[in-house]
Image (cartoon, rainbow, N blue to C red; front, side):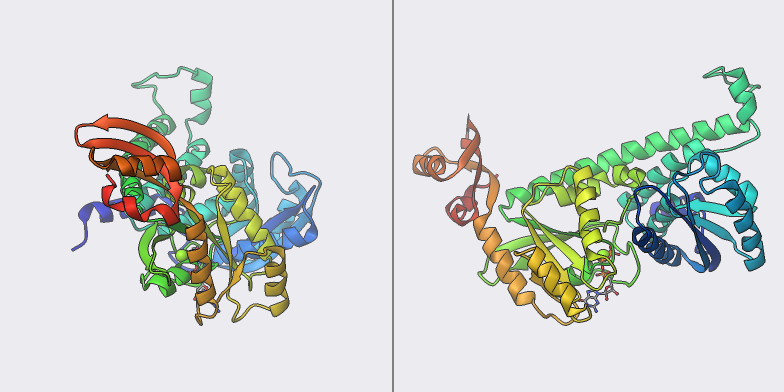
Amino acid sequence: MADPRASRNRRRLTATVTDLAVRRQRALLVSLASDGRSVEETEASLAELGRLADTAGSDTVARETQTRPRPDPATFIGKGKAAELAALGRQLDVDVVVVDGELTPVQQRNLQDIFGCDVVDRVALILDIFAQHAHSKEGMAQVELALLRHRLPRLRGRGLQLSQQAGRIGTRGPGETQLESDRRRVQRRISILEDQIEALRTTRTTQRKARRRSGLPTATLVGYTNAGKSSLLNRLTGAGVLVEDRLFSTLDATVRRLTLPSGRLLLLSDTVGFVRRLPHELVEAFRSTLEEAVETDLLLHVVDAAAPDPDGQIQAVHTTLGEVGGTGHEEILVVNKVDVAPAPIVNRLLALHPEAVAVSAATGEGLDALLAALDERIARGTLSLDLLIPHHRGDLVAALHRVAEVLAQDHEEGGVRIAVRLPSAEVAPFLAYTV
Ligand SMILES: Nc1nc2c(ncn2[C@@H]2O[C@H](COP(=O)(O)OP(=O)(O)OP(=O)(O)O)[C@@H](O)[C@H]2O)c(=O)[nH]1
Ligand SMILES: [Mg+2]
């Protein structure tokens, strides 16, 4: 039943991560209130770090914030503070210190020495969660790539100094140190993964083109992690995607057909959620999954109105979309969890975003309005089609030149090959000729 390659990949992946999930670990969370960040932001970020740590399998036993204009280049927090917290850590018997920021390899090493236990930063924590939640071949390859790219500059070994002194790049043989061969092994694995991901990406692009050729409009659920994207997909299409009250439940894209009240069909996809300061290694590695969100006719941006800072979440989603070139799309803001969210917050979001729709994926409230809004947007929107019109239907070619933007036109044996972009409402007569 189980694919032996999948289980091999999984073993390899779990061997790669700092496995926080083996047993519940005791975590000390540390953050820095520095320039340009308000106390509230720091607090909200620290609370979120706690949820991330919980999802990764650890219990927060203490949280500490230091105010400092800038991170200390050697130890991130101040050295004195680090020593003080190390004593606290020993007293509370912590297994891991989680820093709300991005540590340089040097800072991480120094802190680990001071604390005498594992020290991970926000990036490593998120990578760890992704590693635990990846299931598909593509997802696992993407996470492993992100992990290795993150680890490579952090590999430490007895050979470090020696290899720097020798400075003989490419030297093999007896002088080779453990670290160098580790580096080379990691690098080799990175290039294998890059090739694998590239191949899977090509498959995905082909699938996406096939979907486009089907002439059906596509919409993608995007949003902050835990906003309720998968719940909404399930409610609307009966997809049966895993829904959980934890962060990053979904890492793989799922596409389902949805019939709108007008009878129009729509392809709706669910994808990975976003978080504030999503590690760039992950954005890079998950590019092909995120492209799913970018290459679409319409974004359904789901926001959890019951979350502590919905506005911040909306902004984080837009920032991440910007990083993968996904801005400037038609978007419907879906204000979710209205069954539990405070009414003033829901109302404020609706006032700020006039085209937003308030729903509850849990109770079904507002879904009719959402479907109507989708219908209306799709009717207003445009679609790209690749058509082959038989020579005897010159009337259709002429019609296309009237109603559509013609992107390319060529004469082929079977007829006129023509790529067009046209309003959805005009699509019907041409659908029989899609390539
Ligand atoms: N009360 C309430 N809970 C909801 C609603 N929609 C989703 N949830 C809950 O919110 C949690 C997250 O839901 P998911 O659908 O997994 O969220 P997601 O956006 O797919 O999350 P990730 O895949 O982890 O990024 C689950 O515990 C859901 O049961 C809603 O309308 N009301
Ligand atoms: Mg999900």
